Length: 160
Image (cartoon, rainbow, N blue to C red; front, side, top):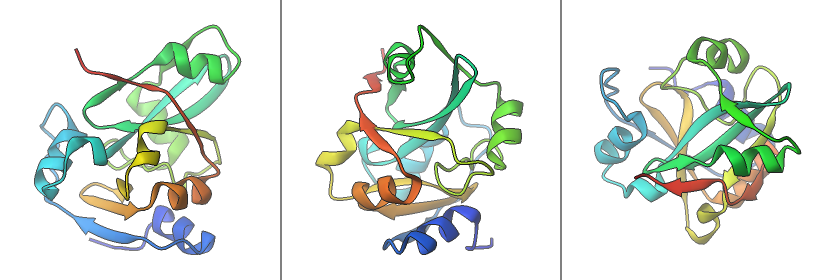
């Protein structure tokens, strides 16, 4: 597995410290984020998943804890729209330049507005996808926000 991806390059370009973590990726699990947390031995609230949604005609990146769901209404409000919807996997892959299960908020083909759930700010570090299935980036939330020009906001809700 190559450890040099557009996501790792984005962290390097931003001059932000990070650590790479690897785990055996299983494409057949329902929740790839929860599977990553378990494989890495980390609490699900520290392993964040990257989701892509559309509000109006704008594609947005949402980064939420793996044990939570994205609050689409909150995301739409942040985008100044009435509603938001998840992108289809094929569209997310085409727009981000990454494969589903390897989508990172960093180093996407086009810079998109990125929102990180504010729960990350209370943690010493979080883990996000490193741009490849089975590769994760561990970094301080502030460093990840800086590297992707992200905004922290309340966009996650606990799973039912």
